[in-house]
Amino acid sequence: MLDEKKANRIRIQLQLSILDSLRSNTMHERHDAIVDAHQRTFQWILSSTKEGGQHGFSEWLKMGSGLYWIQGKAGSGKSTLMKFVVDDPRTSEYLRQWAGGSAFEFCAFYFWRYGAPEQRSQHGLLQSILYSILKQRPDLIEIACSETWNYKYTMCTNDIPLKSDDPWMLGDLKKAFKRVMEQASSNTKFCIFIDGLDEYDGDYAEIASYFSQLSSSPFIKICISGRPLPVFGYAFRDMPTLKLQNLTAEDIRQFVVAKFTSNDRAWSFLKTESSDANRLIDKIVHKADGVFLWVNLAVNSLLRGLDNNDDISVLERRLGDLPQELERLYSHMLASIEAIYMEEASMAFQIYEACWYCRSAAIINQAWEEARFSPSGKTATKDTAKTLFQTRCGGLIDVDVEAAHTDVYLWKYRPTASYIHETVGTYVSSPTIWQHLLSYTSQLDFDPNIALIKGATVRLTWACNSEPRNVLEWIVFYWNVVSAAAIDIDENSSIANAASDALNEFDYVAHSLAKEWRTRAFAPH
Image 1: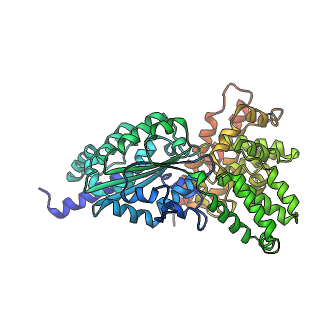
Image 2: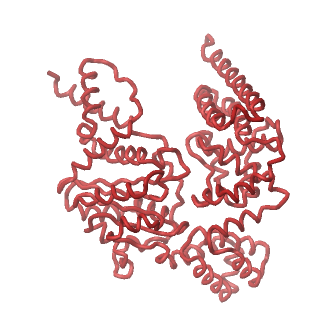
Image 3: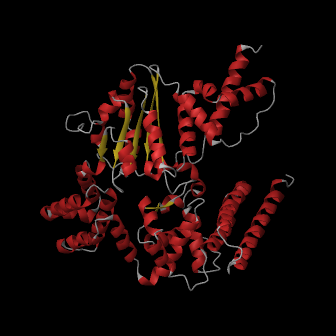
């Protein structure tokens, strides 16, 4: 019979062990990558006033049940809105009113089509939600994971060291999630926020039906955002909803004015030519039709014009030239790349698509350098990153250049390069656009995967020299990058020999670095 002190210590040990097995390095990545809501925008969503609450969302948080659907067209700011709602303290306050003195937990998951597999799958969804809830309610771990708990408990009571856990299987996650949801009652309530359901890599109808059934419990409610696809429209036809693009005109105006006032020339334009400036802002709000992505691109174009001393007629022409539909806008941006740069632009897009393992700005940048000046061997810098992402990609790929080059670990754990919106990936990968891009390198001795292998080799050397204590960790990371690139190379293709040479060079460099590390690590002191 265990004494109470030891039993409590084992209980805590098991809770921490199971929580750690559920935790993932990418769990908060999408939330952190979503741009924060601009100051004073989206306040209406949590407003309790009659004017602000016509969509009923704040009342749903306080007293409602079931499922609430936030629908909006591509680029309308759904993810930013969901992040704002989840992070705002008023959400917890309103849910506390709903709970009525009972315990309640709320958590969020953000689907991401271009993230890691666990960021777009049911497996990742369940694992993330389980981790979030069980971290808040460790008392539920024994119920949710009873088989694992009993096995580990036996090991601990017999003083057998716990071994590292195997990855969770989907069936086990479903079972554990079901058990947690079965604990919902008048004493324990759950609220789950799910962003980007249209970015789920699975059966839309099946998962929409699943969430509808789950939210039928009076003690569970779910808020979902996504594009208004017909399958969701049918599944959520009886649920309360709002159409985001119909509610953001004032937010867009606030955003534009704030961007203008933060720019010296635009601020001067607002003060000295207020009539023209306000007319321009009105046109932006009207033409945007609720699409924040379009607004951001339009404002950036106008700010460039003001820096070039454009008068009002040229500014209005700039605005008129920007297509309203996103696909036409992307074509406009692609066409803005100077013809002399299209060969390098084609390389950049191909390397970005090939670098699916981590989307590291540093690796993509280095691979691009290797492709342009093969063999390069020089470490890519901030300046080359700006050249790549700001001039060769037409603004379609975005990256925080400063962040990507100040923290060595940011390159490893956070994909810092991404399309400005998930619809850009669909646009670029469409057969017509993709073949158009490929045509610029069809006569060159270029392969994006070989470029990635060469780029990873250069960056591995740099990383190990910068962080010599983490040599083995870097070798494993870059080995994974290289392996992912090698998978996509056909061993029977004309580039097989070049690929083999690049892989051999990586192996030689990695082996040499590991040997140097071992010599230093075990050298007598």
